[in-house]
Each structure stands twice: as C-alpha cells, then as structure tokens.
Image 1 (cartoon, rainbow, N blue to C red):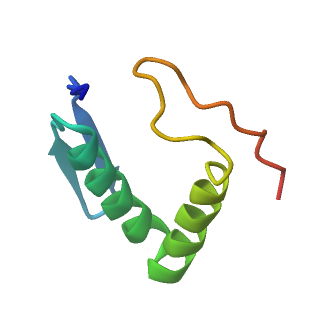
Image 2 (image 1 turned 135 degrees about the vertical axis):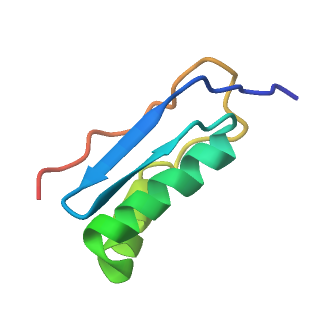
Length: 78
C-alpha cells in the first residue's frame, strides 16, 4: 500500500478571524477542505458540491495507481 504524505501550510482568513492548518495526510486535508466548504457554503451546498465531486469518479476503476491522476470527464459549467 502506498502512503501519501502532504507538506502544506494552509491559511484561511475571514472578516472575523483566521485559521491555519498543516495537514500531513490526505485524510487530514479532506477534513480541512470539508470544514472550509461548510463554513463558506453551508452544510447543504457543501454536501451538494461533494456529491458532484464524487460523481466525477463513479466510472474510475479502483485502486488508482500512485502518482497518476484519475482520468475524469471535465466538469460542466453551471
């Protein structure tokens, strides 16, 4: 099994505050991304966005080879 390590410093700012993150794994990065989506869009809109993102991968054969991006169709304009 391949282990992906992430080296990133994420800084998010709002009018009423800010936060920073240093994710180390894809799972931590996903949680941070979901947290930011919910803060920005709200729960229902974030869920819809995430569902649309997962639809892009519905035809991909798993597991994906490490280091190779999934071939996904382009996202249609809203």
